[in-house]
Figure 1 (tube, rainbow, N blue to C red):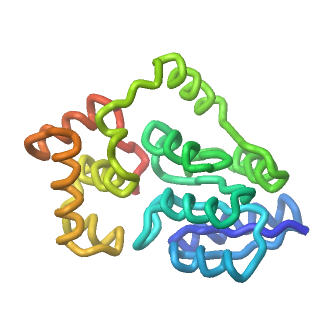
Figure 2: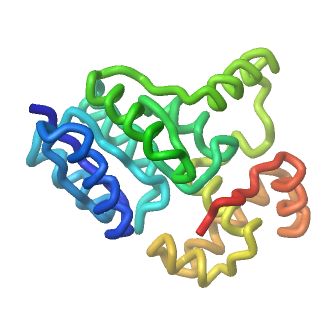
Amino acid sequence: MARMLIADDHEIFRKGVKDLIREMNSKVIVDEADNGYEVITKMWEYDYDAVLLDISMPGRNGIDILKQLKGYKPELQVLILSIYPEEQFAMRALKAGAAGYLTKAAKSDELVTAIKQVIKGKRYISSSLADKLVNYVESGNEKAPHEVLSDREYEVMCMTAEGRSVKQIAMELSLSDKTISTYRARILTKMNMRNMAQLIQYVFTYNLLSCNHE
């Protein structure tokens, strides 16, 4: 009997995935978590075979949670399912130990295939992500300026480029306005940029802007 945790802050989405898993295999026990703290707490309570994890979690970035999960249980299979396109977070997620990465725009049959793979202890790489991995290797793996950012800084950069104000970002990430302002200043310093207009132009140039962000 396999056990899986669905970690996402949207109840309707969790229910939809839970129903999908039950239709797929009645022998999979499915639990839910709506924030990073609950994910970590439940990891201490139950022995999960796999976790379906969103990147945008209240209070903590999903990549940070992923790193903590893998540090606690290296063999744990974590499938990232996010609104962010592969260009934004897939490479970071795989480097942090994810077994796979799918966007929420993926079709249900692809999600079912991915879940079956990670429950078996295998990786799932979509065909589109496989192409990006090949291009990444062939490019010589030279770091772009945004790759020096932490996962949280990277997330704040993308949300800023999408037109969100400091207050909006703070509310969505469950952080203070001051913390977000500090992140934005740190991003400009690390990337050697003068202002947000220059940063936004950079995001568009590198095609990092999410077209799926809700």
